[in-house]
Image 1 (cartoon, one colour):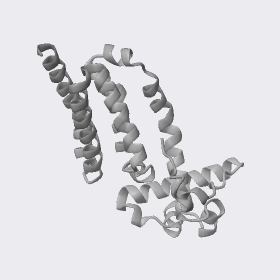
Image 2 (image 1 turned 180 degrees about the vertical axis):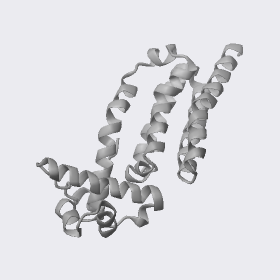
Image 3 (image 1 turned 45 degrees about the horizontal axis):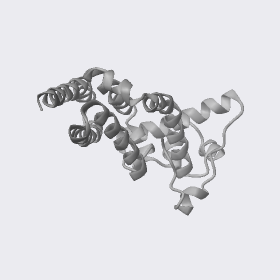
Image 4 (image 1 turned 90 degrees about the vertical axis):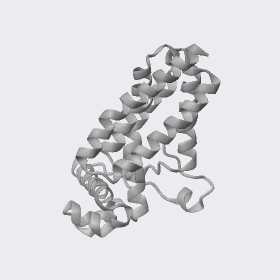
Length: 210
């Protein structure tokens, strides 16, 4: 899901972080990534540094540099970890045919298309930063998928309207939840699929009347 910009020499030239072979090394590397994720979730990207990650993980600074050359490489590794968790679910979404999407109920469409992803990003607030949700390529890919599914479900005119609305709601919700306490996030995440499904049902009814 995450792609490095091939036109960016700095990004294209960055080497992949060192992958440890020993179980102890893998555990230490994961602890450092957990530390970076926690720092992002609590205080934003500016709070992340090699020294801060080492301190948070209870590791020496030398241990951090053993696995990551710099902060960018550590963030790349964090993004790759999220990518590995998200990709199988995203692949299942992409593999559904238009006919399959059209046959699903409104709540099923929302759950299979959007619900699972929102819950993941809310559980892992650092993923928004690590995966760079606002990267144009990723956003366009997500919006194109929603547009295809909504057109299969509602036809071209209403489908395009629904896709634009749902895309805005999803992105806005993810940004909103980053600034809220856990209880507020839980309330929003629990209610959002039903809200979006109700909107989709209303558009389905509108299509039948027209």
